[in-house]
Image (tube, rainbow, N blue to C red; front, side, top):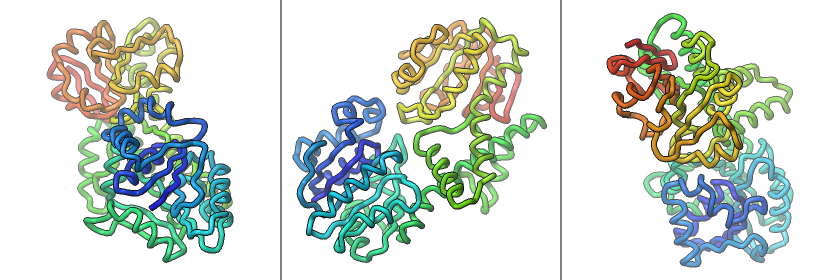
Length: 425
């Protein structure tokens, strides 16, 4: 099919590469704020497995053309993968496409407010339809998420439009039918509701972990007991030091905005967001408690800055409020992350109390009073405990993701404090 694709989001980049890889002819127009030369240098894109290589292959073969200025006169599909604040550009593109005589399907792959796909439909002609295909990609495995999807939500009011979308994505829908078809607004709301539920589970588990800390209970035993209940399951029951990320956070805000617009204030979502922001400082509070508030002049090591493993992004990442809290107390920070240091440096600028350790995570720990684990990159899961014990002055481990065994760490002569877990040497 002939496709015009607009946007510079991860969803746009992935769709451009994937659709071109299976024989479609894709004309990609990145958003003017982030043109292709800037995207090609972006750390978050270079860290996505396979994606940049697939893009370069499609460009070399000619199935993908990047041209920000010249839109093709006639296409079969207009794919919109824009940022939430780019609704005006989406409507302009739909209105421009309405001038063509050939039947057209406009695919809204952006996370816009509920009802926006219907507004795009109003810009179109009689033989043109707008459908909603919410962005369900997982950052850090975007190529796999698109090409081997577990499901696609498809909001459509037209059988002809539904058939065209299924044909467009047929190469990625072979093992079983992964489409869940529903009306437009239902698909838009479902996407927001999914992330709202996941965030609620995480925040609830973090509240349980706080209670376990107070009661001296190991929250890991509680987690396993809860997960064994078939009505609950184990997914998203891991307590931690808060979640971040551009999509997760803005979907929650989008769901809250939808409820507010309907006159339905959501006390639950407000609590979920508030709990998450509080949890982003939980490692600081544990550090404060351990040293009884005497933090000025101390040095700490931090492992991990990205909002999750597998990405170079730090959008709404827990490390940001943690750093602000530490610097307010005069704490020197030495930080290692395998991918996100450029993004962190750009976000915080020059900081006399911050040293970025690009090559060796143990270099961050030399002479530090404590190690704070913020992001559970795989390279941190099995450290050299003897080396850590020798390098940390106070031998304190603050595990913000509960990836270590408390008793084993304590057996190596270190003090362990996790989220609802603890052990002394």
